[in-house]
Length: 336
Image (cartoon, rainbow, N blue to C red; front, side, top):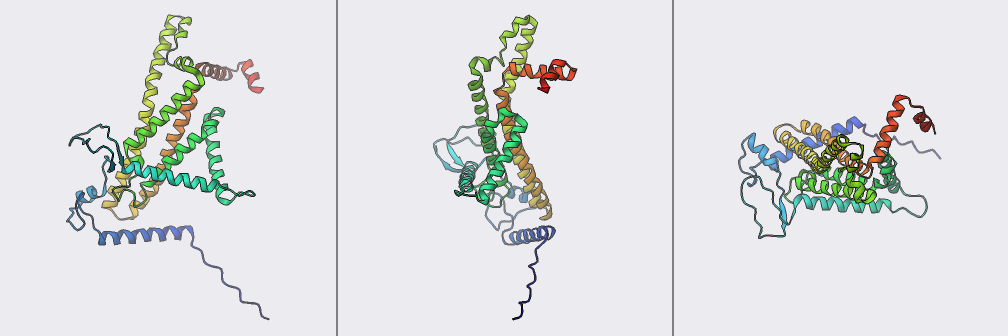
């Protein structure tokens, strides 16, 4: 009996060919969408004439105020015109999108962490590898004190990362009830306030009320003299003011980078061929990852700093100075 003729191995596309194919598909879809549904004025109807380039840009972008999906207080109507800061109970497009992302992440984590009684599955191995990588990274930055706060670090990172990436998915931002959560300053301020509450709560819990407040009001320094006490109080008040600046910097940095990236991507998509938006899309993919990492890392570092007393800081500073000066006691302690 003759052996069957060997079948030729299936040809697989190289990485370069796959990228070129994906770009070609996106270009075809972009041209098809332009011909079938050309740009129309913001708030208008498809088919209306749209002047290039202003109308193309305005019809593409969604400006900072999010769309209200469900108004829980219809009697509260904001005044028209001007920049406003209001408190209105409503479910906006950004909040709804964040809930959807949070739910999907929760389901994915539950599914990936449900391994069998024997050898864990591939999804569970992937989940454990991702968490261990974040744990190693977090402890390498914050030291052993950061180990117990890795779940907070990982939660912020994953939620913000996928909230950032949501703006790069075509349905999000194209329909009224879906929009990238972190492109809304209300959401980023909310995230920053949650982070602020965590590291302030941990500071009071670990050091006590007196111990934590002594970091900002070091009254005991007056024992070392009047001038030392005044300088210490001045430094403490500066640290206290910087403490309230932390949520502002966390929220505004995240909002500015994500919304600015969406504006740049929207303008290039409206005015140029698809090749340039694809290049910017890849750049935004990386920048969104970096912004999620910055927010979560700063939150972790702020928690570690909050639970660290001035006594520990002074000991660490003195030990480092002694090592730099070649102090024999510090060197022997370091050897041990």
